[in-house]
Picture 1: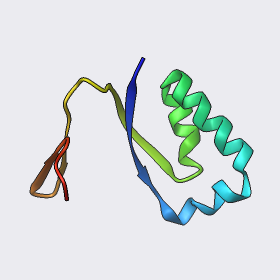
Picture 2 (picture 1 turned 90 degrees about the horizontal axis):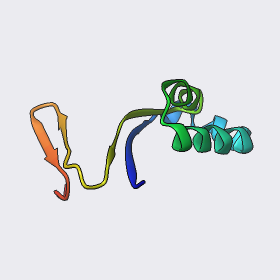
Picture 3 (picture 1 turned 90 degrees about the vertical axis):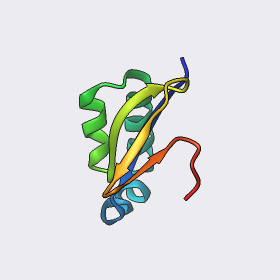
Length: 75
């Protein structure tokens, strides 16, 4: 299964990844294996918030303010 996840990184909490690398890796692995909401919430304590999953063949767009970025578009 080739799933993709979009994430937001809270840089204020990123130091927790360095402080607890094994716990972070385990939390990330659990989310990647399950995609479950509880596993996504566990990643939030490391500063990662996930926004949905999709199969790589499904198109997507990101709306940010007035701009909509489509897959494959360069910034």
